[in-house]
Image (cartoon, rainbow, N blue to C red; front, side, top):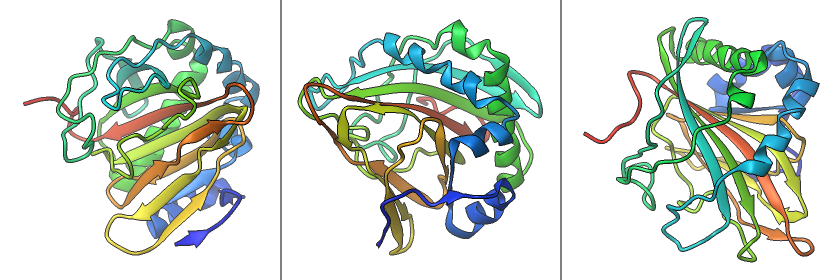
Length: 246
């Protein structure tokens, strides 16, 4: 595995598609995210306080109390974005050995976030990237706000371990990290020996993953002092419909 201590962020947004096609993932710094989404970075940063109001995740099967989250779903058809009626989050055991096969009902994301023009701009941009990579079609988008904290002394961003999500594209935004160590990102080829590890630290930097080609995980976090947390926004883009229990 290749080891790096800083994320391999793209210096030019025009390299995004070639990089995704070559290695199955790409990292963009916050300035590039704002540029691509045609949204001032200040508008993205203004969302950060909304992570202070996430309800606890009541479904952690490892008995932990370290995760808070909200979840909402959207359909993107070209440039037309629609929020769909609130629905549970479901994954098969094939993709989530710990929490798969379980309907998980989370509180929806707040209107103060999802009704902002910048929210629509962000999802439309990522939809265009997904269509460029996989072919133009409707995209079924699940959005997850996460806070992983050190309530239990250790917090696990990916308690299921290295995994795929069963979608076409995964976007992981590092919203904030405070008072912690750890939280290293690891990306591996799904069908090969190569991988890379790095730590996202810049607010609103982005890891984009071709979920059909790579698996990913984040290492546990520990507090540097009394308490700490790591906030992320995860968006998944899936063709053909939402994952749902048959």
